[in-house]
Image 1 (cartoon, rainbow, N blue to C red):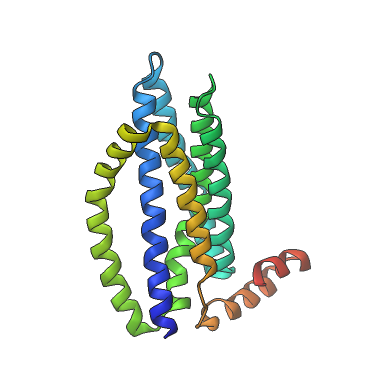
Image 2 (image 1 turned 60 degrees about the horizontal axis):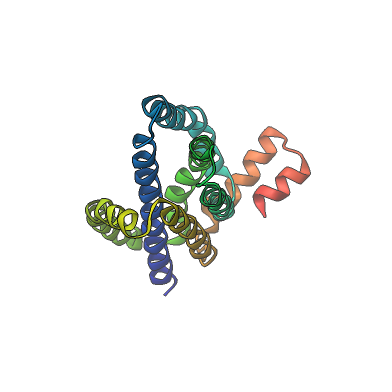
Length: 215
């Protein structure tokens, strides 16, 4: 029963997050490309900064995902992402909106460095081995379909509602992801909790940090 429930929430969360992220990225690139001046400069900064941040922090995200409370990491990073994209929505009409978009995108890249590995790792905390095979099959099939639908949906959203509303939709998608993650029920505690204690003991992390990551 828990396998089925967690599978549904994992699939919903994965595609909700995927939808919001891709629409956000698509909208930003179209907006930046349409700027009257310095569009190439801003586009290069937008793309390169995202790649650099993910390269720099992905290793730390992987380590944290291996030894920490993955559910908490997911909820926190997606909640912060929702707030950041909502700020981008509020600031979209300002003269410095492109700068704000780039800064928010850098922050999102940083958060994803921790969110992405945690999402991949938490699957084994939520599902039995048999259920993982089914989940992977469903996830790949849905993801392939969504990769075709999302760009078309992104074009429709921009044409129908404008860039600003697309930003708001992305903020809601992150908030929805955090809500879905809150519904996860951990059924395989040994995958992370025992390792957490061993890692904390080996590296001598102080009590406040230990309590934050383990509980």
